Image (cartoon, rainbow, N blue to C red; front, side, top):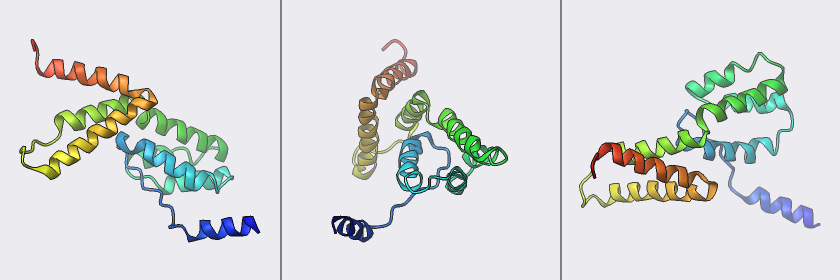
Amino acid sequence: MKEFVSQQQRNSLPRRHVPVFTGNPLDYCTFIRAFETVINTRESDYAGRLYYLEQHMAGRPWGLVRSCLYMNVEAGYLKARKLLESKFGQKHKIAMAYVDKVTIGPAFKAEDTEALGRRGGLLVRALVLGASGLGLFLGKTLNSHSASLHPGV
């Protein structure tokens, strides 16, 4: 009976959504978490996982995954995941994407509270990365980037 109630509760939740990954390192962790939660937990077959992985890619990531479709399905899926991790999920690439977004982002006026809120949200996400060990790297990268923009300061 408990399992029936639990199943009914799960069925009443909104559908989970896996976004399409386009290659932005800032979106990589969110994409992988969604893919693992929604697809990997329900699809035990490597052929199915590889198919869904390709379905949720666009641009350069799609080409990487597509190149693995001609391999044995288990090896192809594992290789596709490794390629995605190496191209988009490495901590230094994610950190540099945050640095670029914060430092090269569009200029805005001090009274533009919406833009200020977006920039603040970006900084908060960057700070949260500290829990994963990326924060220290990000801080050092921001400091060195700032020094190169403002030499002698």
